[in-house]
Amino acid sequence: MDADVIVVGAGPAGLMLAGELRLAGVATVVIDRLTEPTGESRGLGFTARTMEVFDQRGLLPRFGEISTGPRGHFGGLPVDFSVLDGAHFAAHGIPQARTEAILAAWAAELGADVRRGWDLVGLESEEHGVTAHLRSPAGPRKLRARYLVGCDGGRSTVRRAAGFDFPGTAATLEMFLADVAGCEIPPRPIGQTVPQGFFMAGPVAAGVDRIIICERGAPPRQRTEPPPWAEVAAAWQRLTGEDISAGTPIWTSAFGDATRQVTEYRRGRVLLAGDAAHIHLPAGGQGLNVSVQDAVNLGWKLVAEVAGWAPPGLLHSYHTERHPVGQRLLLNTRAQGLILLGGEAMQPLRDVLTELIAFENVSRHLAGMVSGLDIRYDVGPGDHPLLGRRMPHQDLVGEAGKTSTTRLLHPARGILLDFTDDDRLRRTAAGWADRVDVVTAAPHGVEATSQLAGTEALLLRPDGHVAWAAPGGGELEAALRRWFGVPGSEGRARDE
Image 1: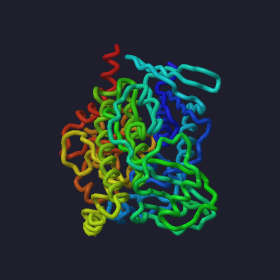
Image 2 (image 1 turned 45 degrees about the vertical axis):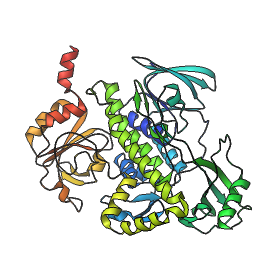
Image 3 (image 1 turned 90 degrees about the vertical axis):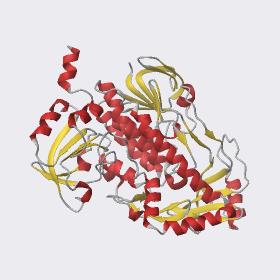
Image 4 (image 1 turned 180 degrees about the vertical axis):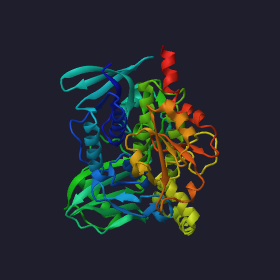
């Protein structure tokens, strides 16, 4: 084998996955057909859930000062995200290119082998491994690994080569996105609907504005090159009456509203993550966020397979947990597309939805859907409010001093939080010491909220989701076996 895992695509999903794998020492090769990053930034920030993900891996300080805030929208209708509980708001004004550069540096520091200018042209998946056929700067090459993950975007070569079904709806319109300098365009941060279509504008850097344009009735086109600036500027003028043709385009792009999702996220030893698994209208800037979260869900499960301790069905749970999240993503982006782009016929719906958003429960529901903070996995029995949810930031104090759940998750290992100094819990978990850390500590600070009232212990998966809670969560050993396999001594006995 040339590697344990080949990751195809050096975007946010691929780089996040590479870092997750390397935290556990998994031999990882990342290939990308581009010789260098494009520098283009379709995304300009990330949601509160992705802020949590980055924080739980110790990545947030690498971004420096981050502008955050509770503002958000659903289909262009303002939503107050401050109704959500959590340690973070969404991050604003961070170009995707910067996020990718930070993730690339992190993955490289951990030892990921990133090979740019390597293009996947085919693959063969067999019982015990995958062979990738590649076009490299030095000519044709082959790489063999135990698993291969396609993180290569909406036009995924991996998806086609491995024969994944990709049902959905084709694009019905074309939209333009561009960054332009020297125009001083009046900002419309959540967009404006006019009879002829929809447009948005906002500053992304000093003297540079981001514009998005959708002309009603403009049919989708099969483009092989970015749209000419003259075409983009002309569309902007038709919708707004503003002439920006003298501006200097930084880059231009065209996209549609196609909505598709693979029927399965795994076929044998080939898996998909991010846009390779689901494409949608980029409403609410959710694409990067769901892609990163796909990677974090998948990473530790692949680690378990490579290390040999994965319980039956663990890797399949990547599909069962993330496919519904993808479905919900497609649902809400299609709904937002209708609200944003549906023209005057949608105005009654906008008016009614505006009234509903004034109710806190409605705002909480929509904000949770767009941010990903409403995600809850089926992790087993119990009625604790945190079961299946990502563990929120919680300051802790114990014999080793002060720490937090966020800091404990930096190595991407399982964690048993013992709040009552129960020796029985430590004895039970001892057999999983190679993959689960036991921490005896007590919650403290303002974050020690009612959701932890009466909680004696919590078991956290490496992705930060709560897998077991006491009291009321059943037996700890059963949860450990479900998520972390057989204890080490039992595994060694079987090997002997």
